[in-house]
Length: 198
View 1: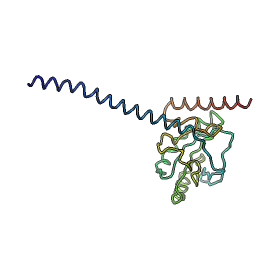
View 2 (view 1 turned 90 degrees about the horizontal axis):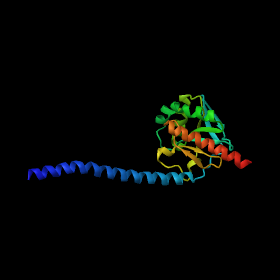
View 3 (view 1 turned 90 degrees about the vertical axis):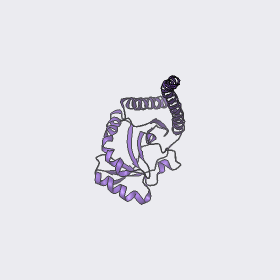
View 4 (view 1 turned 180 degrees about the vertical axis):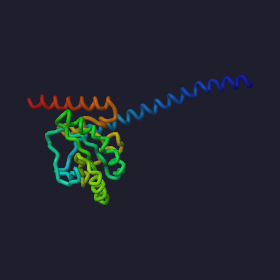
């Protein structure tokens, strides 16, 4: 009796981890499919931008616009996100500015879209941070008026191609692989644009 119980326990010790692994893999496959579906849907969207933004740079507030003829890399900070949390790490994102500058034809946009009641506080915090690069405010959340930007924060960094469809999703600062994908997307879009103009 004890032997058969010991044998069952040993089998269970072998089978249980395998079953758990199968369940985890199946769950991961489901999440991958869901992510692929979200990515496909997101990249099919066309984004509109406001004609002008409020820009804050080096402690000054100015009105600015975004050129239609450039690629746009947007770091979207939506309404309700923790502004102080984002601002405490924004300086770390200067690598994006340098990468965009080195590749050319990309305008990096750190875009805050606060709720109306939070806007004064958001502007004050950005002014206090005194960044030496522009931080944009979209007063009416025009970029996401119809909810195209998913709540999933992995989609809050994205590049819009010349036709204003997303051509890259993610943060190129996250890993060398993400940076490589970013560079490839830029080169591909610029090459396609040059060929379409000929």
